[in-house]
Amino acid sequence: MSEDFLHKKLNERKEQHAFRQLRLPDGKTDFCSNDYLGIATNGLIEKSLSAISPYSPGTQPQAAQVPDRPPRHGSGGSRLLAGNYSLIEETERQLAAFHNAAAGLIFNSGYDANLGLLSSVPQRGDTILYDYLSHASIRDGIRLSFARSFSFLHNDLADLGKRLQAAVSSGDQTTGDSQTIAGDQPHAGNIFVVTESVFSMDGDQAPLQAIAALCAQYGAHLIVDEAHATGVIGKKGEGLVQDLGLEKECFARIHTFGKAVGCHGAVILGSQQLRDYLINFSRALIYTTALPESSVLAISKAYELLPQMDKERSRLLQLIARFQQASLHFERLNSATPIQGVIVPGNEAVRALAARLQAAGLDVRPILYPTVPKGSERLRIVLHAFNTIEEMDALISEL
Image 1 (cartoon, rainbow, N blue to C red):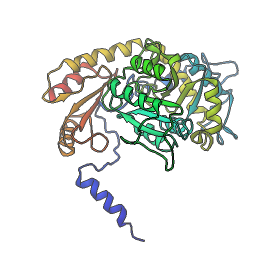
Image 2: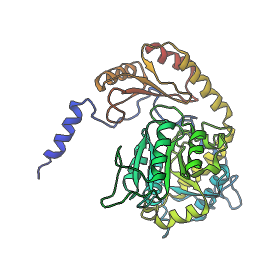
Image 3: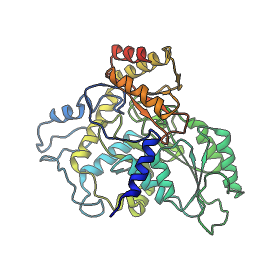
Image 4: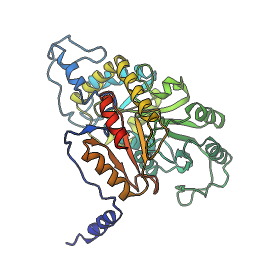
């Protein structure tokens, strides 16, 4: 059977200089991973676990009790069948307490969490307003919803205000990149505003206080993805929402563990009623095998480490300032987070510059169109607490 249809699409990618390939790590200086604090790189979870007397009864970390046997690497099923166990519920309570939330529900990844939340909560007749630069997982979750959806200009409060006013007044919602269901009549229903606290490609922060005020003004439910703020922003790495004291202004928060937390999975935080709703209606939770004990124990231990990592967060601020103050030959995005962008328009040009940096032993990756809009292709440079001043200066010198 012919696979010409695959060959055609792959060739299109190659002609656009956008063909993706998997690569193995090769010892270069890490300026591309999301391991901001070095928890994964430095094996801090493993060291923390090895300090515990091996699986003896009564020996437990601060919040979640260690099993009296080696933690299992399989859960046996979904949470509603054989895959629920005491450690995962204890860890959910630990995370909710850390993030000052009423309840939390663990998902297998940040992608699953956004997909599971946004595909199940907004209903037909509801409206979702989302930042134009929102992550693919947010967009995909919205596509699976029966709600209408409209993007607003990135971090643009005036445009968000207009969209909210239109949703409340049930006015003309036929412009923009909406997803109107055939036969639907204009109806405001519930309104959900979705944004990220720190954006994954630009590294900038959402004006959450102003967005929360607009949501309160128009009776909208605020959903914040804290993926790239978790562990990095806040006195203990709680994220931007808590750093600003906006916990009670949010309908839901998503914290993922695959970045600064140094492991895998995610949690959706909100009310106990939201947790119950997701258990009953979120297909991304109901129809997938639960994370095993080994993964959940790593999450629990990582969250015990976060409050102790003031030195690493301070180091990040130092490296961010050094990079922002450097004189470069390229346009640089204004970011106060570990995600630093250097704009190099054109897929071919940005790939060539990345190859030059790779040849110099610096692992910097290009971000190509269509991942970012045409003309805003960039180097996505990620700074880590374990990067040295010498490594930073080598990167700056090459740029």
